[in-house]
Length: 304
Image (tube, rainbow, N blue to C red; front, side, top):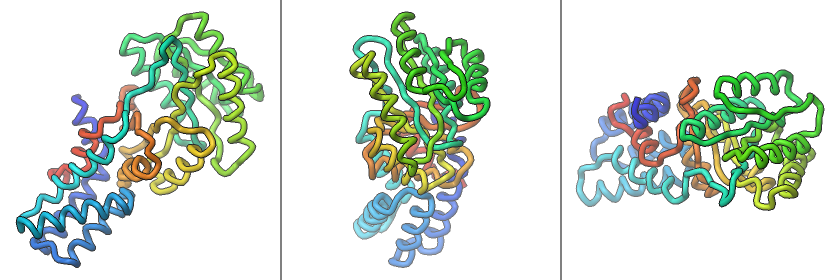
């Protein structure tokens, strides 16, 4: 399956809803009068695309209608979304000297552990050596879950006991990654509410401990967000970014929501690049983010 088809299939719920609404509005009012433009803005906002982006798209549609009388709403939306998302680099950072340390964070249930494994799978497919660190020492069966994933992916894992100091395990994993000349170390952490200061401080401690061994670690702090939560994902992103200095996003479960526009809203407000999006349950369904494919899949006029 080519990459665009993966994006299109994964974003089908969002794109179908948008296409249906846009076609209904344009069919009812081909000249796109003020009421139609208001309806268009409401449809865009309903996809959680963000008020700012929705307003920009509608303004460009209005301008085109006044200048030419014929408007391709889908083309204008695609261009605007691609421009908005293309302002930041979406590739993973790479340390000047291995290992590159990737720290995953997020609230419970977003898919951090699965994302850690899928990211390891993607990196191994590119020929890199990867070490996983099981630093979720709180959630029942979290360590076993990551061990199962590590076995499927075919990479080593460093783990401790439940209740152990997660920062100490992260330090041991980094030590092992250095000794084994691993290209990447991916650290899975316990889910934590962004409103719990003590848990957020624990993440800051993990960063400090890693830097004792490798001053520029972690090279990526990736926040894993559940795309089905819509605007709540934006609230989470704000708080985690404030505390941890998030460098990139992994947005999961986009295949199960009609609110895939949240990717755009987060990127616009926080200027944090989306690095990967989750478009299904299979091992290769964590896809490197591509603004062109995302915009094309979100606003494909053949969706409805």
